[in-house]
Amino acid sequence: MKALVWHGKEDIRYDTVTDPEIEDSRDAIIKVTSCAICGSDLHLYHNFIPAMLPGDIMGHETMGEVVDLGPEAKSRGKLKVADRVVIPFTIICGECDQCKRGNFSVCQRSNRKKGLSEKVFGHSTAGLFGYTHLTGGYPGGQAEYLRVPFADATHIKVPTGIPDEKLLFLSDILPTGWHAAMQADIQPGDTVAIWGCGPVGQMTIRSAMLLGAEQVIAIDFLPERLSMAEAAGATIINFEQESVTERLTELTGGEGPHKCIDAVGFENHICTGQPDTILDRFKQMSLLEQDRGHVLREMIYNCRPAGVISIIGVYSGMVDKFPIGIAMNKGLTFRMAQAHVNRWTDDLLRRIEDGQIDPSFVITHKEPLSAGPEMYRTFRDKQDSCIKVMLQPGA
Image 1: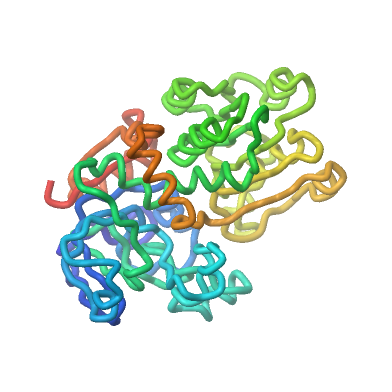
Image 2: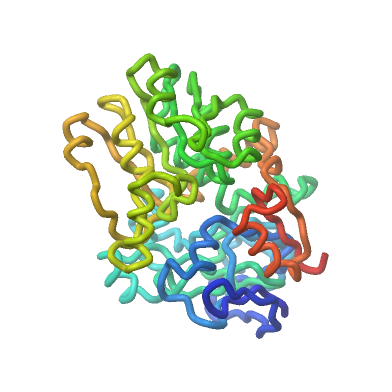
């Protein structure tokens, strides 16, 4: 089969690779109909996340059709051949203590390389598709076919008659944005500030509005992202043209937002002109720290006392100059996680079917899988107003 394969820093190729096979009795094989390039994939593209190996297949936003099932996956009766499914980026067993609690991104069984994960994170996280050997080294879904471990749990069954464009993002960015808003504990009347208007940020903006936020403030610098946020009803701040702190002070009567959400993560490309981020970038490139902390610092400084900081952007390790004293004395609550995708997908699928949200709005480029290497560069460089790339094998 054909797949997008990592060969090193900024080197993704459209290669012929071995077809996946059933390896465990709970496995399924799906024929991929659509997949996407995620902002998190750029962390691997830039080789900022360790433990990628040449030959690893990329991708964790995938949907398709079941073509084969292991005997136990078949006997459990939750899947059958020809079912149409979206595959969450988190691989879940559905049976461990964390899965029973709905904490799917920290499933205790699905990471098949626990020792490596435990050395880095202290405890193992869930296995993830196409996302380094820290999270299991599982082949990803930017391919013609995908093996799905624990398939009777690791799937979202979706109806026919709804196009892939509306359903694909149940795999990651829609539940990720929803999770960011939910863990912020948004209440009617809240002012919510969201740093980053990429695909996850866009879903977070709309989630905050669906949850009753009175005012949503979106912070970025790219005109196409800010226009998309403004079209959803957000008040926008272009940090290249105005001070984020001064503008937030003005918009909140000096009180600050009730809830602040980080939809950027450790690269912080949206804040490259800030002095502390220039220093962070130098430290990161010199291996003196792993993550850039500008957005975290700015949220802590601007958040209203007794407010909530919600972190959904990906961080990989250590952040320097973290203002813990400010956070403690302001009484801020921090909540963060990789999204627990399956916790939210029943509700989100219903909202898609009811027309409350159509996630396809975020797609700016739709291309065949063979165009993947070129589209990685386009997405990285934000060329052609690129916000989200959808890829289709065989197109």
